[in-house]
Image (tube, rainbow, N blue to C red; front, side, top):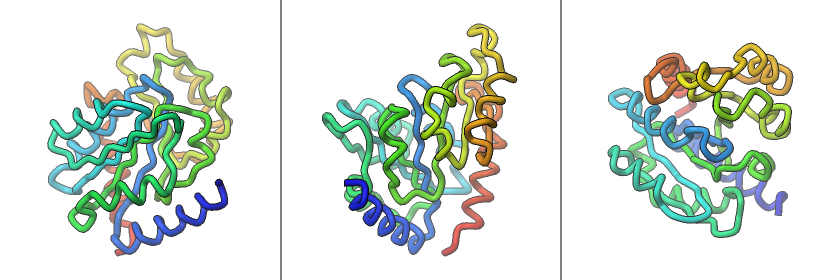
Length: 210
C-alpha cells in the first residue's frame, strides 16, 4: 500500500507543480484548532493569494461546511474507517476544485498524529500543529510525525497561561525532534503571530515554479 501511495504522491506532486500550486498538508491531533487556523490563513491571504481546501474526516462534513461559509472553495473527503488521507483520495478531491484559479491548496488531514505520518500526499510542505492545550510533550510522544514536518506551528498561544503551558520546554522538544522545521507560534482567533506565518506562505508561493 505504501509503495503504491508513494507512486501516486509523486504523480500528484508533478501535477501540482505544473499548476504552480503551493500545497500544504496540515496535520494535528483532534482539537488543536486546525480548522480555525486554516480558515484564518485563507482569510489572511485573501487579496494576495487564492486558497482552496481539501478536508479529510472520518465522518461528517462540519469542518468543510464551516470553511464554505467563510467563502473558501472546499472539497470534503469522508474516509470512513481510514485514519488518514491517501494520495489517491487527494487526487480525486483535487479534480473537483478549480485549481487553475488557485495559488495555494491546503489539505486538512484527518485529526491523528500516528498513521498520516507515513502517507505522502504530494504536498510541497508538511505542516504539523500542536496546541498549548495539549501540553509540551507532543513531539516526544509522536516523533515520526514531528520529524517529518517542514513547519511546526504552536497554536492557541492565547490560552498558554491558563493552561500552564511551558513555552521554553515545548520549543526545546520541537527543536529536538523537528530541528529542521520552521516554527511559528500563533493564536488564530486573535490573530497573534499570524502575519509571520502568512508572510512565510507568500514567500514560499513566490518561490514556487510556474
